[in-house]
Image (cartoon, rainbow, N blue to C red; front, side):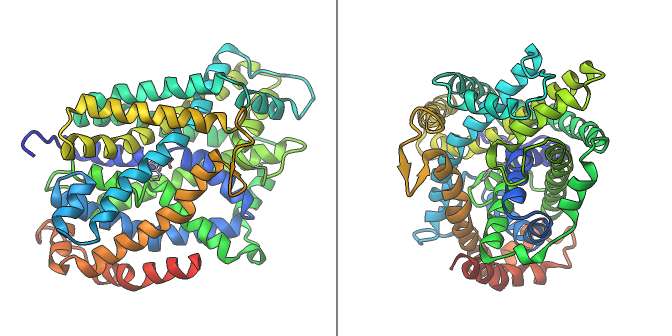
Length: 449
Ligand code: TRP
């Protein structure tokens, strides 16, 4: 593809990929999963999943993307012409759509909360601990407010995507990611001064292994895939914009490290807050971040309301920015696919993706309120859009990618990509191949069964 752009700098590569990885998955979904799966034991299993499953699969996607410099569907097609493997490329594109639809809904919530922080609507000094639970429930069941904010969010994503890889994604990530890391550092310090901080820390650091089950492990694997943006062609597409001198191994380690640090820090921010609010439990589900933190922001700083105001605004801004950089990485594979495979202009491709996502996203948003009775397998549409990819499609995609890179691809090709044709050293290469060939597929399959 003659007009194909690459990322311009090494820093751009790391920040754009980290921008994809760090998102609602870290700050919203991770604490929710930790809470629903029993705390510290889950955190430990999660860390193991990141190292043993996440990093190798990310490397696999990097190899596939960078070697072919093409969108995911074309990439698999090129590497395995006429073989079944290529289904993974197209499936990735499809699943990105599903994620995109409900991702924009939650991102819309964060945008609304940032807005409500700004106008002061999140300031409440009374003693009713259920005030913010009601505030959240009233908002998500509102007939059009969440829909409006989800749409606004998608318009912004669209604006960045149409600007392209270098002027849109890369430039934007270079500004946003440092800002995001700074905000999270400030908030962590603030959380340690809360009354519930020691209990929160104990919850995250003292494992109770009796709470572990196969389901917990599957949830941890799903969360690792989700948080690292794997198995859906996101990082594979980004890697197709890497230059030939990009160090894939170093990039994968940096991105995974940043992503994991942010998730843990988010836990350190949220659990002290949860334990400081009477009536909230760590297992309270997806609303946790939206119900516990506003209470903290307005009560922990009751003597200094300005600080509460600033922290609240900073936090929801943080969530929103994190969601934005991830949402563009979910949008890009689909846009690149339509642009390159179906020969649409980039502008037109992006418009299609945005429009279809918005339509499905609206339905998904309404399923939290007006359409709450519409159930599939006993779950609302919203829960389906979350669970289906994380618990089934991504683990299956993970198995396919590990088998594809471990067994099907020429071992020399993989090693050449990872060492930039002998210019870099990667002594762990045999371990990497062993994980891909045996450990990952067997482990995921066992846990799923
Ligand atoms: N990793 C992002 C997050 O943590 C979300 C995300 C981006 C994603 N791209 C993805 C999830 C691809 C699954 C697959 O919020």
